[in-house]
Amino acid sequence: MSTEQGSGVTVVDHPLVQHKLTLLRRRHTATGEFRNLAREISLLMAYEVTRNLPLERVTIETPLETMEAPLLSGKKLCFVSILRAGDGLLQGMLDLVPSARVGHVGLYRDPVTREPVQYYLKLPEDIASRQVIAVDPMLATGHSAAAAVTCIKQAGASQVSFVCLLAAPEGLAVFSAAHPDVPVFTASVDRELDSHAYIRPGLGDAGDRLFGTK
Ligand code: URA
Image (cartoon, rainbow, N blue to C red; front, side, top):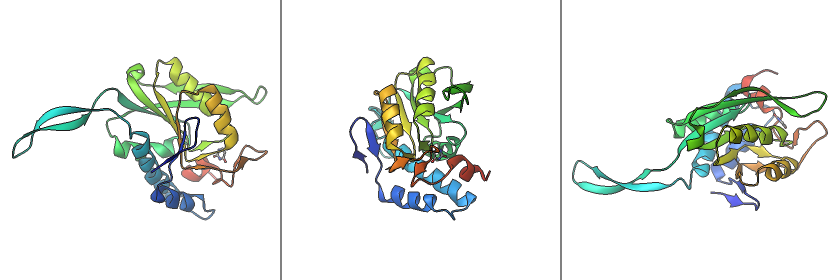
């Protein structure tokens, strides 16, 4: 269940996603529960983002007869986690598509230029022939997500989608301007980005909440 918001943004408004997102946002949700919820929501998000994967008809034998049945065809999947919080969305996606390959992109923001700088990149060699789903729970300023997708495209990928849990309108504008061809799937578009680049009302620091580092 989803609603298209225009310019390639889909809000996944399935009741289970929205319910779990509310539990995730709560201040007193502890690390273990937060991690489980992120896993469950990302599985449901993966269901939506893979909705249009192409199928082909193949001939199979059931115990009773031969039949033509649908099977996934075309490009295989690769999930790319934008470190470190993206890792919190990987397991749920892999629960749904266990055969997918996994890549990682690490970026930090240069304190002087404030531009994202890549410090880690590990992608499957055959990424050009895969459909890529980049994941980061928070699309805040949009700069690191846009830079990560640029790295993924430079490695040869041409079909890329982006999945987050929360997006700020400011981040969506930056990201969509940089990558108008990349559809964004989010569980919510929140009100705004604050002066510290936190999404409001948001859920706080997703990485700290996932890994218990605060
Ligand atoms: N990253 C986070 O983890 N939280 C925000 O609100 C914004 C960016």
